[in-house]
Length: 218
Ligand SMILES: N[C@@H](CCC(=O)N[C@@H](CS)C(=O)NCC(=O)O)C(=O)O
Image (cartoon, rainbow, N blue to C red; front, side, top):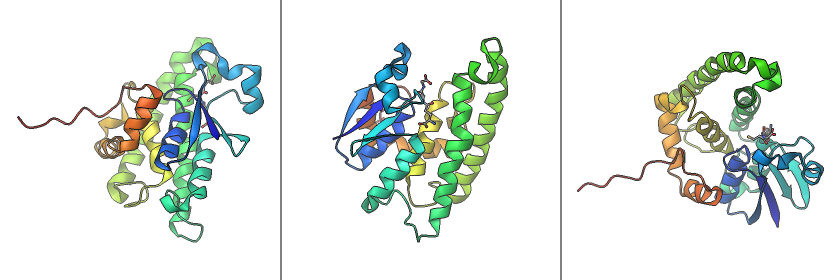
């Protein structure tokens, strides 16, 4: 059985979410990142980077959330979460996956771990400089959804959309959450309305950023 090493709401969330969408049998193994379990000798043997996620897939431990998503989506073409190799949309898919992984996600790493680039004394300076860069990323992604939506590649949902939804979620307690941008808000609502999202939340014990229950007319 494939095993996902995860922490609730962390970068493992999107791997967990896609596995639920793919109906992929798996086990979850909680890594208590607050207690430093990601740096235990046992875990470092699986993932020498000391971060989650790690997915033990067909017996082989693998890391990097974006790479895991792309691998899982390609392994199961029936669900169509990745354009095929000969599909002209494949290049767009690569572009957005790598943009999210290389240009947007690292901004969050700096937001949450500001001591890493600048030392303990300079955390506030890092955060003051990162917040507008995250806002600028939302400007660009909001424009993309406005012009080409409802998903990043148009009508077709791909693994990149799950990734984007996770990043939007991460901004929920920032001075300007991504849901302040109207097209990102509509996108987030579409993603949060998926039945798999409720299952994901239940399994990871999450509540924040769930859609409010639908109000019914009296
Ligand atoms: N590029 C990695 C980043 C993973 C990452 O930074 N994970 C964070 C949680 S979102 C983590 O494990 N933090 C604990 C730590 O760095 O000690 C990926 O996408 O898989």
